[in-house]
Image 1 (tube, one colour):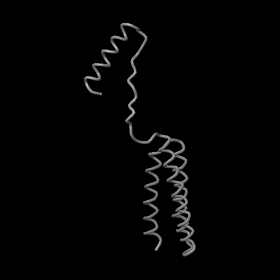
Image 2 (image 1 turned 90 degrees about the vertical axis):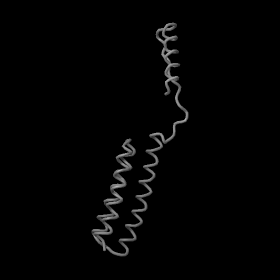
Image 3 (image 1 turned 30 degrees about the vertical axis):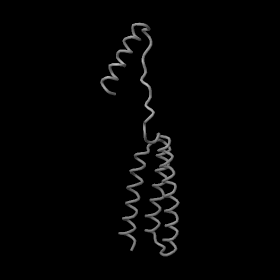
Image 4 (image 1 turned 90 degrees about the horizontal axis):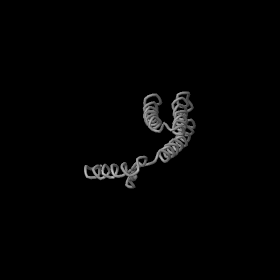
Length: 118
């Protein structure tokens, strides 16, 4: 808010305060706000985690068909559990934490696949 806008609001408030003591001036909401609403962010992260869960399940099936190993199930199983956790965190409104966990889990699974599974 610029100085001239603040002066105008202050002038309106003082005029309103003298005429009607219980009335307050509320600044109009800005219509040019950009970004997502919290509900949209939650839905986006739930959709992303669900899509990643389907992708990981497909990769797990392919990897198990080529090589049956407890490490394969462990690495991809943990990523599936993490996707479910991210969906639940997003549903409860912890979208940033869910996003960080999803990113870290994906990087960890890729590193685990590269290092642990030859």
